[in-house]
Image (cartoon, rainbow, N blue to C red; front, side):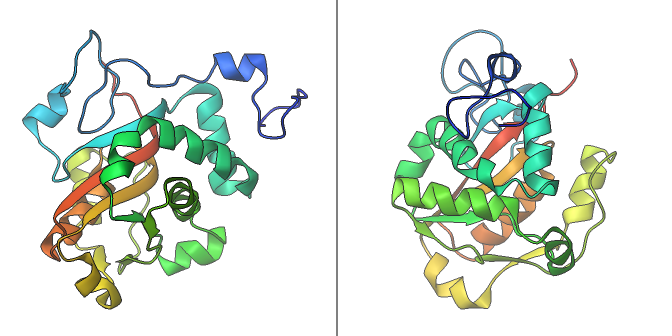
Length: 223
């Protein structure tokens, strides 16, 4: 899939890449998907207890490291759209409960300038396939990014939140449709959750009953 080693299936992982991909299958934060030590349900990480996200629940399929990181970068910047179906199925397995209750699935949008440069929105590709797999309504342009924000790389949590403030709106076309609905937001990677928080806020402000989030990969915090 991402290396030169032959695999029997076109979208498969070789043994080395498979062993280097960390799936989040044990205890995890119910808000942001961060892997946690121990066992149990309804767990929250320290950050989500201190700064509760505006969304209700969140899931992540894998951690952003090793082969998974290389695969996601190839998907985002290397035109590897062939990876999307496999990635979407990984998200589906991790977020089955959220997909069941979702009325609408929508991706985190790209600004039009970034979309022109990248040619496609990787989160929209994941969202589209997830909607097909779960037979859930997909609205790929539910949210609009109204401001071209600078890259989040290297920013602190507070700086990331400030960077995304006021950057999203619900499309006027769907204001009525979102009323009283459960929305599931899809993104490729969650670091601090600032982008997803900004998106969830405008969905709730526009009348959504509930907002959950699911991502392909979760960046693990140090310590």
